[in-house]
Image 1 (cartoon, rainbow, N blue to C red):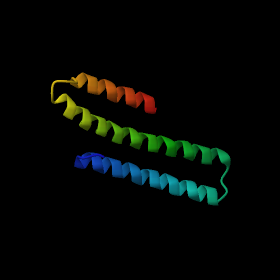
Image 2: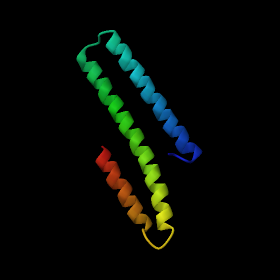
Image 3: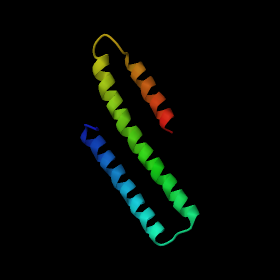
Image 4: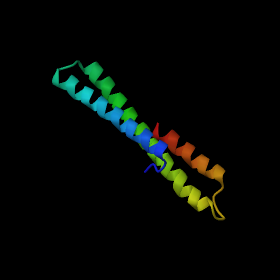
Length: 91
């Protein structure tokens, strides 16, 4: 869960964007749109949801691992490595 006000605002904005995309998809389906545009809209929605998940997961990892690294343990570079690995996996 994003904790800073900026992170929360970004997450909520992304959710609103996804909701708008889903509404547009629903209208396209109800109007009998061609498959191509519907599939393109689905791909955009999937990308938006993956981006939201990546953002929230990154925030969570940074918060959890920074607490661990405050003691004698994980250096900050390792946190960056984990975040980069997760980012590449979710793309």
